[in-house]
Length: 326
Ligand code: TXA
Ligand code: MG
Image (cartoon, rainbow, N blue to C red; front, side, top):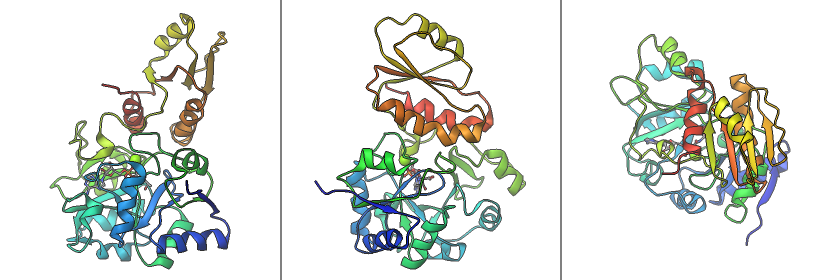
């Protein structure tokens, strides 16, 4: 098995090696402000194909293309609507992905055969520098096996993708910690396809008009599959009272609990991790906490349901999918 190269994003050598590997058509996991992405040169179809193999991702699930500046947008997109300038001014670089009409020359391998392309400028200087040196966009889904937990540190990538990819560029922990909002601008009224750190209200405030945010979408958008973002350990979402009752009635099971309420567990077969109740801090630590619990060989992970507020809609979306088994 090929050993994964661990590169340091804060050294010239590390960054140069990442550039060289991508130029050679290899896959490199790279840090972004949201989660680690599994990057390939978006102009190299053979390299992009490797992403689907490494992740065991179905071919029809399209990839986000990352670019380093707004000037490069026209290389990937045509018929750029006016709203893009406004949204870019407020949210780029940052965790907002825009769905637009693709240029005919953009490979259908990236877009899963669709006429649309998802694009964003990530808020990570090293990554933007890499793209600027390569003078290309990077096709990059989250750097995890299909349907599994997203990675927010190089360690998460190493634990789940070793042997499948050339390297990981270690840039530390992701600042935001949850995947970008995806906004479809090809519909008459802009529509949120995946909830994320940029909320509906934030977008409406900038556009000055109402946008759609439907609960159900076609499963073709892999982020909208009912089953996704899952720990390997069976996981259950419970409200605070149910969680307390459940842990008190426990007999032999060894369980992990991720909670934000102040709860003291007296049983020895409960391993608990307290996460912050403040939304942005919660998002930052959510995947890391689940990765940690997932390594403990537990029978179950119990997750305290987050507050049912619009601000938390991205967290709730991920946790519902992480605990969906039908
Ligand atoms: O924050 C993020 O968005 C991270 C970082 C690495 O940028 N990326 C990420 O990529 O979450 P991925 O592939 O795990 O999720 C992207 C989602 C998928 O659900 C995919 O189906 C959807 O975007 N998507 C991409 N292109 C699309 C298109 N043309 N039409 C509809 N959905 C699309
Ligand atoms: Mg993903």
